[in-house]
Figure 1 (cartoon, chains in turn purple, red):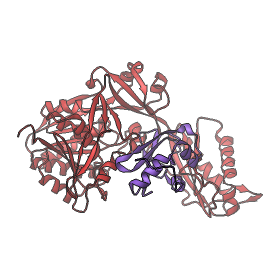
Figure 2 (cartoon, chains in turn purple, brown; figure 1 turned 120 degrees about the vertical axis):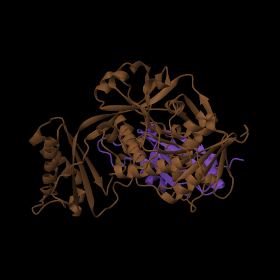
Figure 3 (cartoon, chains in turn brown, red; figure 1 turned 90 degrees about the vertical axis):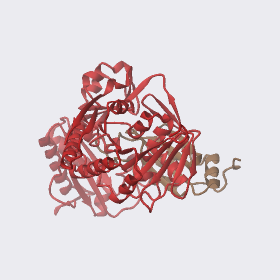
Figure 4 (tube, chains in turn cyan, purple; figure 1 turned 45 degrees about the vertical axis):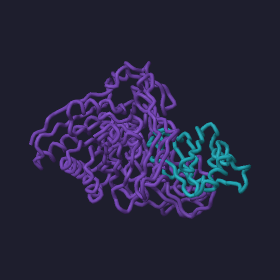
Length: 104
Length: 455
C-alpha cells in the first residue's frame, strides 16, 4: 500500500483509508477481498460487528474501512481525540500475492 | 454573462479559521483572482465535546482576529462576501457574538464604511429539544434521544445547512458569521443563492472546506479556490508549490467521511457515485457528475455535550522491568487506596499505559511486545475539583509507594515528571447528543440577525 490513514468520521466512528500505488494492486486486493470485516477485525482483535462497512473507492484506488470507536471522541479516557493513530495495526495486514483472477 | 459561462468562485482562506494564522501570500494570490466569496470554516466535532459543553475558547483570539481581519480587507478590495461558519470551534452563540465584535472592531478601525453583517445562531435550548424528542433518531450515538439524555446535556447546537445562509444573503449580508454549520454549506450557499447547481456547489464545498488538504502537498494554512461552473466545478490551490491532482481531489472525497459515494446533509443527500475527476492543467482539477438528491424530510444533525465532572491529571513513569511487568497490579492497588480514602463516591479514574496500549486500548495487537519504559496517564474525574485533586494525589502517592513482585519502592516506585497534579482548564465532558431531528422548516433550528455596521 502507498497510503494509510485513520480519522474520526463523526464522533462515534473511525474511518481507515487504505490507498494502493497502482490500479492492478488495488484491483487484486479489492476483488480478492483481502481487506474485509474479518481480516480487519482480526488485525485489531475486535468484534466483526464493530466493523461497520468496507467500501472500495475506484477513483482513488482506495479501500475504506469504517469501525465503531471504542469510546466516543473526547469522552473520559480518550487518548486519540482525532482518531489519527488508529491505523497502525493495518500496516501488518497480509495481502497475499495471488488473490483470484483480477476483474476486467 | 450567458447561461453557459456562469462561474462563481469561493476562496477558502484557511482550512480552520484561527487554528494558526494563515499565510498571507497565497491568500493575496486568491484575492487577486477576485473571488465572489472569501470563506472559512472555524470549527469541527473533532475537537471533542469539551469546547461545546464548557463554552471554553478554542483558538487564541489574536489568531482569529488576524484571519478575520485579512479576510475582511481582502474581500472589501474585490467586493466579495465574507462567510464564516462554526465560529469558535463548537459554533456556540457566544462565539458568533465574539466574531461579530472582532468584525465590527476591524471594520471601524480600518474605516470600511457601511457593512451589513448577518449572524446565524444555531444553539438549541433543552426545551426546544424536549419538544422534539419524538422527531429524533440516532445518528452516531447508540442510544435514543430521551429526556434523561437531555438532563445530562450542558449545551447543544444544530448543524445548519445552506438555508439560513440563503436568508442572510437575501437580507443583504456582506458578512455572515454563523454558529455550528455543515462545512460544505457555508461554501456552497453563495453559489446556490446565485442559482448554481446544488450538487456541484455542495461538492465544491466539501472539497475546499479543509483548504490545502485537497491539494498535494497539503501545505498548511494556504488558500484554495473553488469555482462552480454550469457543468461541474474547479479546484485550485493558491500556493505555487501546491497542485490539485485527480488523486488529491478524489482522495479528499474520502476524508473523515464514512461513505465516499453518498453523503447525507440537511434536506438531502449528495450522490457522488457518478463523479469524474479530470485534470485541467498540472494544478487544477475539474469535477463533474455530483448530484444533489433532495430528501422527503428535512433532518438536521444535533450535537450535545454533557459535563461528567471536574478533571485532574497525573503522569507517572516506570523504568524498572519488574515495575513494568506489574503495572496492572500497581494500578489495581491505587484504585483500592482511592476507595479506602474517598469511598465509593461518584468518581472515575482512567489509566492509559503509554508504551503498551494507551492509543489503541483493547485493539492493540502488540500489547505484549517488550518495552523498556512506560508512562501512565491517569485522568481523575469527580463531581468537584477538590475531590478530583485528592484522587490525583492518591494516584501520585500510590505510584511512588507502589509495591510489586515482593518489593517495595522505598526511594519512590515511579518516576514523576513533576510532583504536581495537572489541572486542565476545562472539566470533563462527553458527547450526549449525536442525533438527527426532523424539522418542518429548516429555519426552525436557527435564527438570523442582520445589523448594519457603520464606520
